[in-house]
Image (cartoon, rainbow, N blue to C red; front, side):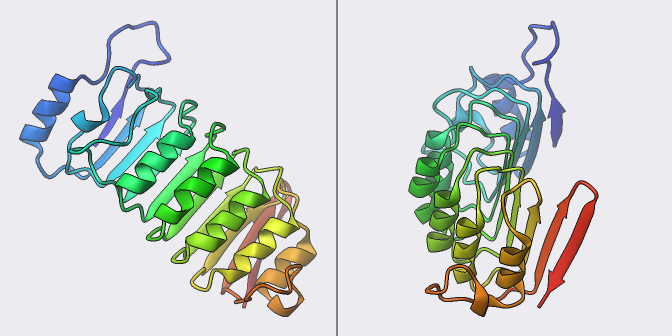
Length: 229
């Protein structure tokens, strides 16, 4: 189900209310996917969402400081966030520790820090796909991901300027990783990318347990290439 709110309009009408969600739960007891765009959710308790949900997408939404937790809240397997400015380290910890995430996409979530990733990563052991775009993370976040998120198969890292070759090298320990998407807005050298994807023995992290993965895609303005093992 896809719904668009009125957050960016002059209207004061709220898209969702606990009563409406209760009716939705009653009439759609098997609803699994919900996508909300430009919705003001700041007065909406998280546990009022249909408990049957396994996938939630939020685009340009406002959320309260306490969300993604509750005894009857949905146990999400898939969460996609695009320009949700209030999403913080605490939200990330809540959703990772109360759900069974297999896919997580964070885009423009500038309140998520390395500390938040450190606390959440041990709870993301079932995660298979991770997308990080326009975040303020550093190499430390990649180290925490590589240490704990061992089932990761697809990783996308784009428009995160503080990442370097050192963080990239830590990904060599992800033995199940199949596809890595990068862009030239990160500070990754082509040599480090090629070493990781094609010739792990020359990685800039020689003490790591290195394992090559089949595909790496690298793109930027006027440039696109792929490496296959």
